[in-house]
Amino acid sequence: MTDKAWLQLALTPGIGPAGFLRLLQAFGQPEAAIAAPAAHTTPFIGPAAAQALREGASAADADAALIWAEQAGCSLMTLADPDYPQALAESPSPPPLLFLRGRRAMLQQPLLAMVGSRSATPVGEKTARRFAGQLAEHGYTIVSGLAGGIDAAAHRGALEYPSSTIAVIGTGIDRVYPSANRQLARDISDQGLIVSEFALGLGPLASHFPRRNRIIAALSRGCLVVEAGLKSGSLITARLAAEQGREVMAVPGSIHNAQARGCHQLIRDGAALVQSAEDVLDEVGRLQRQAKPKTVIQPSDSEHPLLAAMGHDAIHAEQLSQQLGLTQGEVYAMLLELELAGRLATLSDGRVQRLD
Image (tube, rainbow, N blue to C red; front, side, top):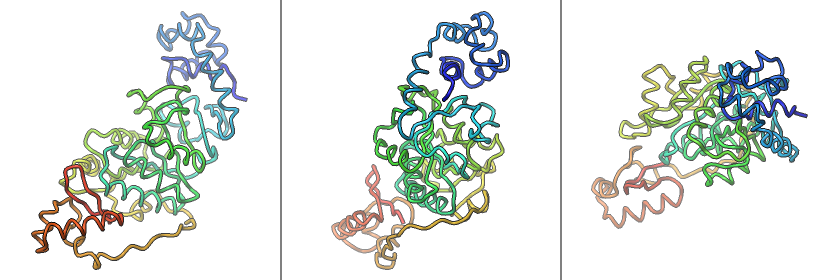
C-alpha cells in the first residue's frame, strides 16, 4: 500500500516535483519532512508551502487518493516504486506521484508521443489517426494529452491495436477535459491507460498543461507533431523532447494552412520531416508488427473526378464548378455524396477539403 506520508508530501500545494526531491534529500523520509518545523522546510520550498505542509493541508487529498486507488483498474505509483518508468525517473522533474487508471503495465512498453493542434483541420485529424494506427500496428504505444483535435485523433487511431494508447492529462484523474472526450476517456481507461500527477478534483488550470507535456515528452522515445500553429502547446512538448535527447519529428503541411506553421518551424529548427509511418520508424526504430484490423476499401480517385480536381488544399465549390464546367448544383450534389462517404469535409469558411 502506498505510504500516506508520501502522498501528503507530494500533494501539498506549492511543493511541486522539484521541492519534493529537495525535501527528500534534506530529511530522508516524507514523515521527517512533514514533522519538521516550517522554519526548517522553508529554505527548500518557500514559506507558503512550508506552512501548508506543517498544517497538513493535503491530508484530505491523500486520504481521498488512497480510497480512490481501491477501485478496480485504479492505482497509485510513486517515484520509489520498482515499476516507475526509468525514462521518466531520469527526466529533469519527475513527478513523485502518479494516478493511474487502466493497464499500468503499458508504461513499460515502447512509447511514442503524438501531439498537435486542438484546432486541427479534418485532414490533420485523419493524418494523426492513420499515423497512430500504423505505428501502434508496429508495436508502439501512442502517448498524447487527451485534448481535442490531433490528440484525440491519435488516441482513437491507436485504440484499434493491442499496443493501444496512454493519455497524460492536465486535470485530476477523476475529471475529463474537454468534456467532449468523455467517451474517449472511458475507452482509453478500458483498453489503455490514463495518467495524472494532479490531486483528485483539480480542474484544467493553464499551468497544468506544460507540466503534463513534460511527462509526455519524458516517457516517449520520440515526439511526432502532426499539425501545430506557431503558438501551439505541442511545440512545448517537442522542445522538451529535444532537450531530453528524444527524436523530434513533424509532418509538413500546406503553406496556406496556419495549423502547419508550427511544424514547418520545427523542421527548420532540425526536426525530422516525416511523410509516412515508415519515416517515423526510420527515426525511432522498428518493433514486431501486430495483427492489423479489418479495413474498409474506398473507391479510387478515378471514380470521383471531383477529388482529382480538388487537389489537397481547401477550395471553394465555385472554383470546382468553373474547373469542371459543371453547374454549381451538380458540384454541390457530388460534394454531398463525397462528404457522406467520409472523403471530404466542409470547413468553417465554406471551402471543402479532401480527406484522402
